[in-house]
Length: 118
Image 1: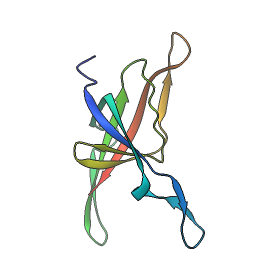
Image 2 (image 1 turned 120 degrees about the vertical axis):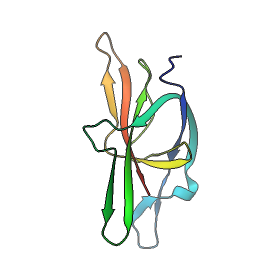
Image 3 (image 1 turned 45 degrees about the horizontal axis):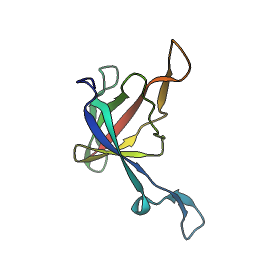
Image 4 (image 1 turned 30 degrees about the vertical axis):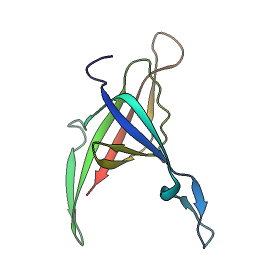
């Protein structure tokens, strides 16, 4: 294994539940947790600010992270999932990118932007 892909995350996938008003929402209390080794999570690149502060009613800090898998590794991760890593819960921010393998069928690697809100 590469030195770059030595981290482990917990994928958190919550089922849809119907609330008392008939609305569909994620039931995070009933979420399934799956350990996923061999990933790389780093602060987001300069193209997206690594963190930003907002102070409408209270001060919050939003920190962005980039998740990558090793070449040849696909990851069962959806935009509705959450990720637990390094003691924090991160939300998948947008679509999960599955880069095609330029030399054959399948996925070369997966990338996803993650957001931590304090």
